[in-house]
Image: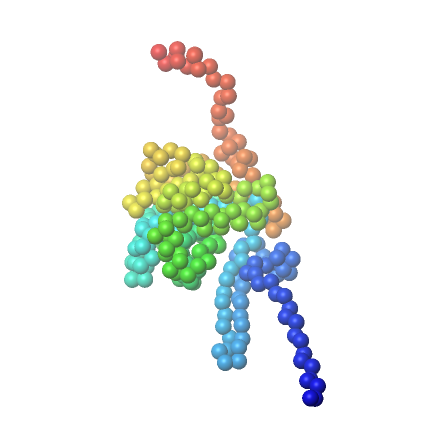
Length: 282
């Protein structure tokens, strides 16, 4: 029989698929401090060009981050907060825009963390940008959503009631971007105990973890008997959230222990005579 023709062997190149850029790849991008709009596009012969827009935030390692949940924290409830905006009805808490705007003026960076599915990214971004009180709106910041389908995200949030697993892992990965000896998180806002649990996992002090109920009552995780509101917290902004200098392109900034509030406040006495206090009280 005639010899068979040799078959060409094609070796497949090993490809490592990832959705994260390396530090070397990020360094090649012409990023400027703050928000940077990026566009991903792909062109096919039959479907034309499809584009997806996103935002890369370039911050300094000295910046302080304030983490906020969306549903039930910025909105008044989990479900109605997603449905009613579709009908043109405002369902956000009173005072949340004013408070977060004050935090932005004091130099803090807002990070929005939600258990919504990744498929709701565009709607969620548009929703946050549409919330306004007069000429004020919510500060711009990265929005982290569950990288799952709508069904899986709904199952973890409503049925399994374990949204803290995703939120904790997400915050831990965000912290890993910063130097090992730096904790960028200053405070956190949520509406459930799972939110507080996630914030505690990344070492946010309990005195800076706030939970809000559907009526707009805000409680501090450290003093649960103390009840306030977003509007009332405006009176404590300068003490609870002392101003910090915004980061410069050189990466310099101010540390919280050197703020005006911490410098001028009276120190807590370390040597207290308990017996003398008891006698004085009698």
